[in-house]
Length: 150
Length: 227
Image (cartoon, rainbow over all chains, first blue to last red; front, side):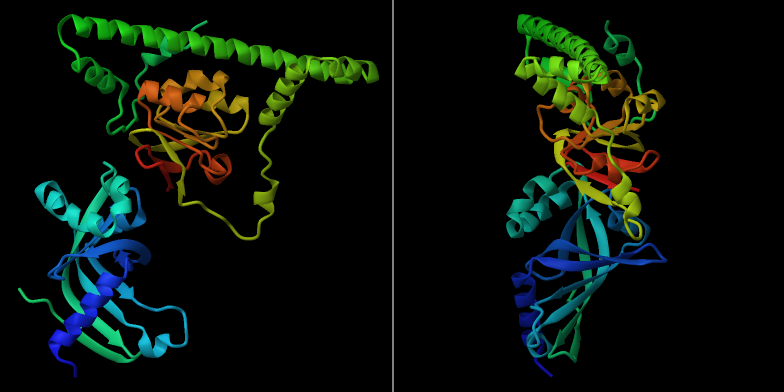
């Protein structure tokens, strides 16, 4: 078993190398997955993403704030089975408003400066996912769970 | 004849616009001035609105002239070779105008969609933000001029292009979605004048959206969400 610091290093490297994640939401009945541009806070306790309010995912998040997010490094090659890294993030999403949004917006825009117009539109919502657990998969079958500290 | 003033007084009951209202825009504009300058700004705004109405009246008259031109061309074609000869003798610019008008007036062919295997449904379509604001309501797709007469207050006007003759329904609309693109096309200009959210340059807007669909128009980002 790798040391916890090594696991954190793998997760950090993955989150810093990828710009898009698969966000899964559900409205109590039907799971729904889609790509979102994400950013992680430096302490890896939170992930951020943005969506307009007319979307299905926004409606799902209003109905059920629990989410699953998949971030991975696959390249669609056979080598992925040995080399690709994937992390599943479980947590709870919360729409940011007021000063919280003001504080987190620079973190998000630092990662995605080209989304300035999108994320600052009055019709767009910034979400913070409070990470409860990271599930790291390496070498196809090696699975480790890690829980952020308080 | 001015259709706009009396209809402008009608406030769409179901319009849910966040920001972008003509009234608040006017207040914001006036608030940039003080004292005598404020009165001057109000005058300028009145003048601009009057100019806009004159411009729009011109468009309505032009639309009628174009319609008469098409009618005349049809009549000449019915008269056989002699009539066609007359058509060919028309000045090139008039011939071009007639061809353009007939082309844009052709009803949209839906056969391709009907023949498609399975069912295609647009969920979210991206165009260009042409009038800020957010509105949600039932779509009214205009495929032929007669569809305009079914338009109800608070519906969202969806069309290939806002024709000058369609202007009279615009004040009743909660939002406008148009296939033709640009910030300076007729639909965009009147949408901003009335503070109505508007998205232009939406590919196949009039075929992907159906009358009665509930749609959300995000005039800030140029996004139309169906359902």
